[in-house]
Image 1 (cartoon, protein in one colour):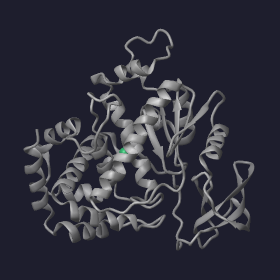
Image 2 (tube, protein in one colour):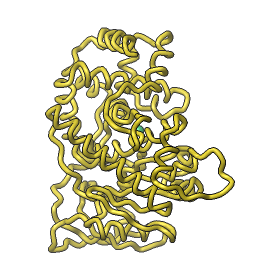
Image 3 (tube, helix red, strand yellow):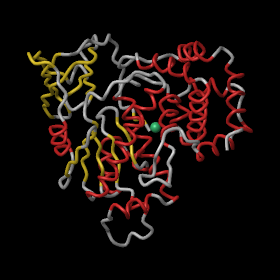
Image 4 (cartoon, protein in one colour):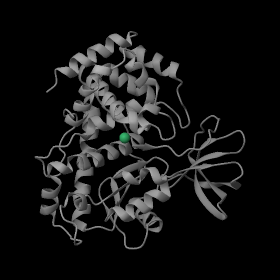
Length: 378
Ligand SMILES: [Zn+2]
């Protein structure tokens, strides 16, 4: 799930932002002193400001009290400093573990944090290999990637409610493109049959618990959200630009397929996603002829619980087909989106024009081809 928190639209050209500014901000009765680079400046004085921890602040003109350019260039925090920043933002009792690319703050067991970091680093390597093999140029993340793991659902729900509101407390993890954080909780609690007593598990027990079939979707969720985080940090997508939902979600689902035979519950990218395939096939009977056009242009289908399941399955099927059968066109198409600047959004007509440029003008014919291809998958 990608969470969009932007309230109002800023209209302005993006700036080349290599120098740092000190911005005084009045927000909810507090005076904040932020240091960062201005990504976008609105004509009315509103700002999109990125601080050194990678967070992006949407500041209205009224909130901005003063601005001062500093001499020093913009530099991301290193892993240690980012870890300290995370600890300031979290309740007491958290500690930090850093790996090559991640800064993981957790208040659950060391063993669980280790299990997660192994999974994340494995995904990281597989992700770069995957795109390199297909000729898509990506860059390493500019910021260490921040991850927060709560020991149980309660602490997580409280934190995510503050960040995102009520609706999201039901999901087991999310990536927030405002903070750049991936947030989740220890899944061994969900995987454990009886929860009468809090327990700490060893690495082996964690692997066994999360290799149970019931954990499959949970592990998939971690990989899914981590894929969103990678996409927004490596130049595949731009935070605060609107990538069509089908594409952002289709890619995250394409990466997520779990593999229960493996110790981390996940091994490789692009296996057939049984769960989404079943959903896709079960909706075929009622599929309208213009379904592809709907999926390409109407992001609201993904947000409603009534239509979301089918939309996610269709997004996966389309992505699966295009990566398998039209890889060169798909990569060329992706390059168009990696060029988007923050706050850029394509209209429905622009989305269709861009899609047709790479995959042909007859969308209904393409949809029939995708259905035929997916029907043969086992
Ligand atoms: Zn998602």
